[in-house]
Every structure is written in structure tokens, then in C-alpha cells.
Length: 430
Image 1 (cartoon, helix red, strand yellow):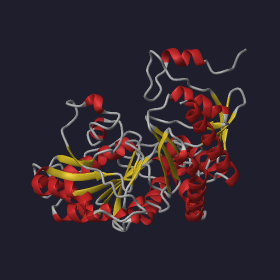
Image 2 (image 1 turned 60 degrees about the horizontal axis):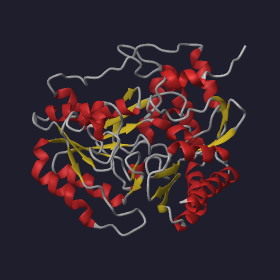
Image 3 (image 1 turned 45 degrees about the vertical axis):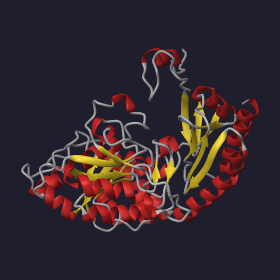
Image 4 (image 1 turned 90 degrees about the vertical axis):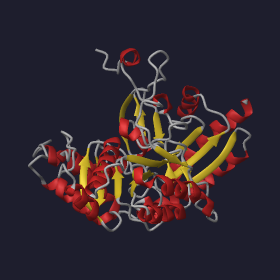
């Protein structure tokens, strides 16, 4: 009997993310994963430079997280959170309140990052209603921003430069300001604030909240910006009575060299969204945190309650995985680990800047980005990376890596050397 994955059925019948059913991108069959490696069905071992979309920070098949999930499974896999509670959720929320910037004391546990953003948007509207502002129901966001694939989240993604431009004119109409251009390692240009200040001055009576990804803009362009922008944005939001929502789904839990990217600017947002690495990549879970003031204002609005309640909210298995993952993170020297990864990425990717096909190389924390001058052929370049023993998933002009925190110096070197070989071959054949 053939126990291999039916790749042809997959190709004919199964959707994969951002893939056409007419000409689907190849989907490589995985048999297992361990450490930093994905092992394909034919035995090929690939260093995963994506950490499965930035979530598997402790590596695959981690014995501590495995054990936590097994122990919880023997007690209960799920129970509704309406009217009930349980230890994994309580322990997780205690940890999140302790780890996040001071003042974020209320926690809503959700299913996924996009849902966490949806909850944050609802929180903001209900907060403004609780404050007596019925017309503050629009959102302000940064150009080049990305916040998820559900409708509310898509509506605060860049309407022109993101993957959601197809829905222009259908999504709710929100406001967008220029993304900052000052980079983290340069002097801050205060002109970066002009677009934000002007919009808040003229439209603050319409705006519930300003939504942004702190310091690192992810899927909208993998852009890094100066912490001073975030610090000044918080001041402007406070001045004009607009809430600040920090989408830390990609940046949270050490990825940028701080536990949360907001800490680079010493800012506490009114609302913060978390996800991805929260469970160490084991299963879907997210959280939306807010201040006591926001929670109080929500409770004063006409509904009197926060109008959201996912079926699998606070799933005990996911909460148990998250508790184990966050314990591992706090027990490891994650600051020096991320700093070492940053050094290795800078050292390994710097030569790419000399290639004619490369626009820019940039590194921040455990994030490395090679921006090409023109879009890449994803299927072709992925095949080249696999031949080098690497798993990467470029998009548009961007070839980027977000390694797992457990990656060794030798594995990181193999990752960057393999990337350089593929990029050099592209340059030769250009």
C-alpha cells in the first residue's frame, strides 16, 4: 500500500495560501519536522528560514511543548469559555499581563492574528461609543501596513500597496497616512510625522484608532522604521483622543530584540494584538490586550459588553502550548540569542548588496530582508533554495528570513550561504 501523500489530489482540489487553482505553485510533501528542519517525504532536509511564517521560535517537535499539550489533552481538549474558565487560560493571561508594556491589564483570547485585529477594531469603536463619540468609527493606518485577511483587518491594510487591492471599493473606507521613511539606525526626520499630524488635526472627530505595526512593517513590504515615530505617534493620538492599536502579531515575543517592538519606543499602546509565536507555532491562538481605561469605556457603552466571542476562544490545548512556549522563552537568553542571529544575518547577507539584481539588504533583530529590483519567480526560486537545503517563501520583490531562535551558528551560516549562492546565480543569469 502506498502511504505517500497524494500530491496530485492536493494540486487538483486543495487551496493553498495565495495560490491559483489554474496554475498552482508546487506544494512539497512534508513527512515530519524537528529542530530547525523540515523533512520532506523523499528524505530531503530543509533548514526552515521562515519559522513557519514566523511562529516556530523554539523549533519543531520541542519536547517541553509536546509534553504540555499531551498533559492537557489527557484532561480536556476544549471547553467553551462563556461562563467557564480554566487554569491554562488564567496562567497564560497572567504571563501576558506581566510581559507586555505596563498598563495592558485586560486580555481577550482569540483564535488567530486576524481575529485579534478584528477584536481590537471592535474595542476601539466601543471605547469611543463609551466616551460619547458616535461618529468616531473610522480607522487610521499606515501605508505599506498589513494586518490580516479578514474584512476588518483588510480594511486597515494599505489599499494600494498590499495584497488586498483587489477589494478596493468594497472594504470599509478608512484613512491612510504616509509610512515613516526614517530608518532605525539613522537620525529621525520629524517631517515623517507631517502626514499623521495633518490627518489627525483635520479628521480626528471621525477616527476611532490609529493602527500600526510597531517598528517593523511585515507583509506590506518588510520595512523597518525609527522608534521615534512610534513615540511621537502615541503623543499625537493622546492629544487628539484617538486610540493607538499596536499590531505585534509578527513582532512580539523577542523577534526584534525586545520582547515587544513597542519597547523600542518605550510606548504602551491602548490596545495590543499578539499571535504567531505565542504558542511556539504549535497551534492557532492570539490575544488582544487593552488598558483598564479602554476596558472601562467599553463597559460603559450601550451594549455594556465587548461584542465578540469565538467558539474556540481560550482553547486549553493552545493555552497550554503557549504557557510552555513562554516559559521556554523567559528561561532562555533570548536577548543575546536574537542579537547573535542579527549579527549572523548582517554578516551573511551583506554581500548581496553588491549584486546588480538587489535593491537593498536590511536586517533588524532576527529578521533579514533582501529586496530585489524586480519581482521573483516564486516557484523557480523556491526550487533553487530547496537544492541548497533551505525552505524560504519569497513574495513580490522580497526574499526574507525569520529564523527560529534555536538555530545554531553553523545552520545560520548554511542558510545565508545558500541564499547568497541562489542570489549570485540569479545575478549571473540576469
